[in-house]
Length: 137
Image 1 (tube, one colour):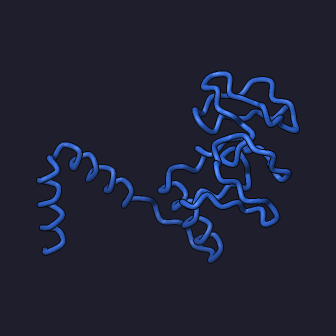
Image 2: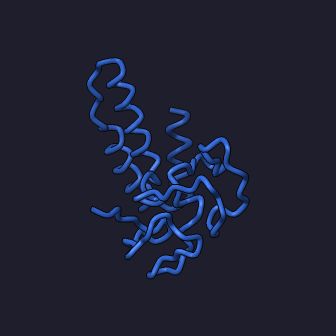
Image 3: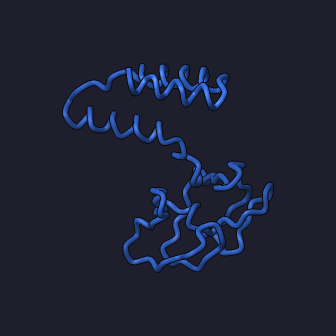
């Protein structure tokens, strides 16, 4: 069974990818280069865009094709863990597993979602006033 890769930029399934991935590999849908840092399993999306591979050279543009010798394509692209809440929930589950606890259900995320929906209906001034009132009690 061959590996299936998704474009780091648009998320579309990449067709007929031959490994090792060529530097010139592009997405057929959006035309984005695929031999890029954001498509690599070593890409660390912590805000600075660091590489987890310690021996890799610095790449200034993480969205353009490069010649990195340590490039290993990620099947999901960079968008797989783009939701910080899912990354947080995953980390909490791993921590609970480490200590033999069962992870708590994410009731707070449901409450946050409903609060965000209410905030979307409010004007910026109303949101600021609500935040101030919540802060002051």
